[in-house]
Image (cartoon, rainbow, N blue to C red; front, side, top):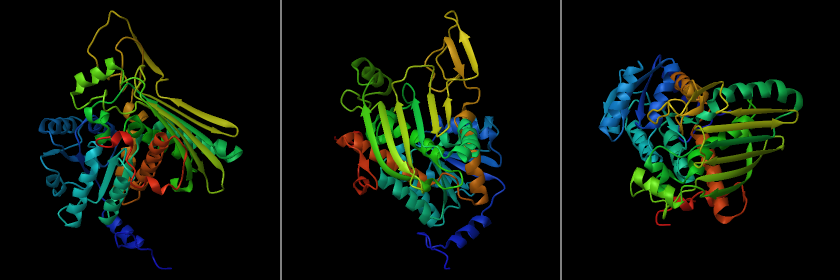
Length: 432
């Protein structure tokens, strides 16, 4: 049988042969982006072997230097600051790129990586991208095409798939419960907090939407992951239909809209250009045997509690699994007599400094960043295909666009849905 030829023009065997040649003792990573998520990834990489953070590029020198200093402090360097992306790509000390920059920059970053590799100006052989992969299906397809054409190994950074409770819970459910009573059929996922960290998250055209795009990408993929037989690929589940709802519950109220403008400036104008702060999804799927499966998901930026809350459930014929990130074993109480600066030292998106507070003693591990990065580094270093690739990132964007379209037209959207190929959510349309 002839070996199939990929879109890059190489046979599967040839691609694997080249990847084996690329096996590295240490994977030297360059970061694109220097914001909150870059710092979070760095902290998680303390638990990752065989990695060095060799470079960082972003537009602001002070922000780059902060990441360089943090990498040095954590013993992950030596790390260099690069004033241009091409400068970092063309440095022989960089093997792989982690794209951690804002959503609206990611496709241009990928185009530069593609050009540098194709023109043999760069020895980079792998790329990982934060969630979501892109703002539209067209952009996501282009991200995948560029990675494949440049023969780059690629990974989609969806941390909740690698959350320690998810890894352990799924393993137990499928090994003990599903093996006896049958596969799970319903996954529920919810994520909510009081709002994002930076101005661009609140701008629909830059971010690609509101909370549905920002956080539902987590929920639909971790739910799909939990429903997938561990012995089969994620593609073994077929999306049949999606139904979505979006709403503006909190941040369009005059008081809170003014807070956003005061905090981020006139470019965040929630009176005239709001993004949804609540989203709900129902997704119908079927497995290879034709069994009906369901995902229920909700996300919001309108939750005021201790901090970021993730709730997951998996239900089957004779069993269930539950996880709540704020139901921690460690809690601390501080009376009103104790005061201090606002911060996020107890839990991400922390909303209070007093009272009974849950504490996540290892956020990077519980949220999945440590195992996510460990998995990607080992896959790239050994030339293997990661468990989450740009193909999965594209599938997530397809679900998100279906949900936005469903919310806009007020009806369930059946898949496949070719009308979504060029669709842009209403909140992301410039001038809408």
